[in-house]
Length: 398
Image (cartoon, rainbow, N blue to C red; front, side):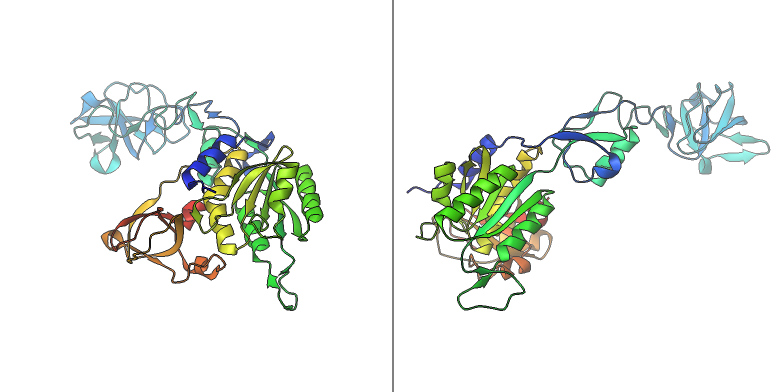
């Protein structure tokens, strides 16, 4: 069976993704980290009028290098009178420019002489922030599909908007397969391993602002697997499972998904994570991750997260990797695109990527040690100093 390249799998996931969630209006205080469902157009200009960029004196520029009387005082929030000819207006930062003035002179450049002030030469428009300089009325200030950050909320507030139309969070049903799995806190039993994927993936889904329906561990039987998939399809927008998508006699997920819906992707040219699967159960999307925890982590970050973001209404992310030099040499040439857990060491031109010595698909401690993933294309031997695409974890989790 030919393995599908990672980029082709991403293209197929991108084409299949559809927004699965409803929308509602939320006040700004409740809109952090959710996804904007409709373009936000500003109802006002920011600033709403020409205003002073500093404390000083508003003048007509042709009155440069003259002694001028001060005809009015203009604090922020005031409504100034037109500037009297041949005078200056004392003005403060953010205050509207009086009609007739076309420049502001900083207060430290002005020389008081009795009850008058001497103006230095000043250019027309100096130290004036123009109306609409930041935002013009009618501008799209936040496009639909944006996951809202504190600065987006501040921007919405600055144009007078009190609530935003956003997508509701995506609901994801999660379960693990494997009779060998036991829960943390239980006494170790012979032949068992602790279920790390359950907690890894719940935390990753929470980071993606998803609601999680936790179905726990499903027994390694065809009937239990089908029951879990049917329950998941009835309760969630997307199903994620770990384990059971390989070719072993106890791997029942792939067959159950095919019986209940369809499997559109299975087995990718990726390392770790080859058994990744994608399809649907009835009308609910299904994503099958490998059971090994490092494989589950890599496939989630590279394949699952962008798909979930798109289903939650977010624009398909296109993070640009950083080109960083490899700090090692290897003659080994792999047949699959590899995502190595690496540390970024050094800075600037001296920056180098250093791989963890153990890249086992079952080893999570290497991810705790690493700063991100380095991509080694299929058929490529790594030579020291060659540039590799580096994806920091901070970027992959954004």
